[in-house]
Every structure is written in structure tokens, then in C-alpha cells.
Length: 136
Image 1 (cartoon, rainbow, N blue to C red):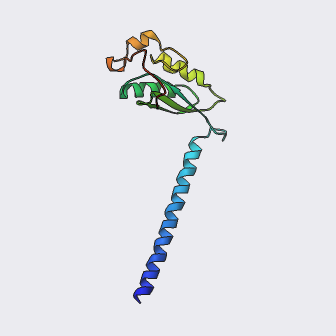
Image 2 (spheres, rainbow, N blue to C red):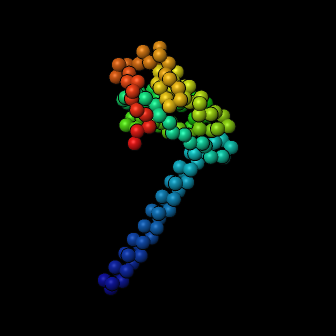
Image 3 (cartoon, helix red, strand yellow):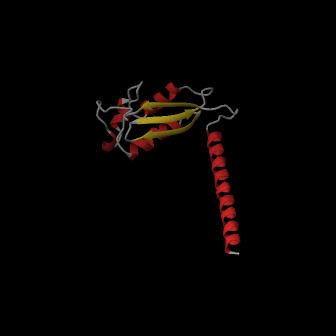
């Protein structure tokens, strides 16, 4: 009798583990749909350097990138001094995102930040011109 109960419990445990595995597969599918444009095509990805110092920089840099039509996702890494963007290449190209971030006062790999916008940044956001970008 005890062996029978133990066997049923083990089978039920395996069924639960199988269901959890299915849930993970659904989550991965949902993530994939985020990386698609309105026509169902995958979005382009780009990573490039952006100078900055703190959480306020992160907020401003990401806001500037998101202000560009066609940018679906923008995440700036404070430690690495780089941003990863997902964008619809049929709507925008990467250079437009560089321009938007530079207009907010931040240097990128390709563009120098607007001097007036930089001078209006809070003191904690003003960085050294020698600051390295795309750090590991």
C-alpha cells in the first residue's frame, strides 16, 4: 500500500515538472514576439557606447533613444557605458538613435553630445571626455 502511494506521488510529481517546462517554453515565445515589428519581421539589434555616470543618465539616455520612432527597446548599462537597442530598420536607422542621444548631451561611439545640452545636465551626469565606452 505504501509503495503504491509513493508511486502515485512520484508520477504526479513528474507531471507537475512537465507542466513547468511547458510554461517556460511559452514565456520564451512571448519574448520572441517583442522582438518583431508590426509586419511580423524581426527587429534589428545594435549595441554601441554612450558616455554617462549614473541612474539619472540611464533614464535620460534611454528616454532619448525611445523618443525615436521605430525604437522598441533601449537599455543603457551604467557599468559598461553601452546601450542595447532593438529597432525596426524599415522605420529608422541606428544613426538617428545616435543623433537623439547626442542631442540630449551624451557622447556616443559615432557622435559628440550637444555642448549646450551637456552643460544643462546635472553635475553628477557630467562625465570626463576620456571616459571609456563599451567596457567589458
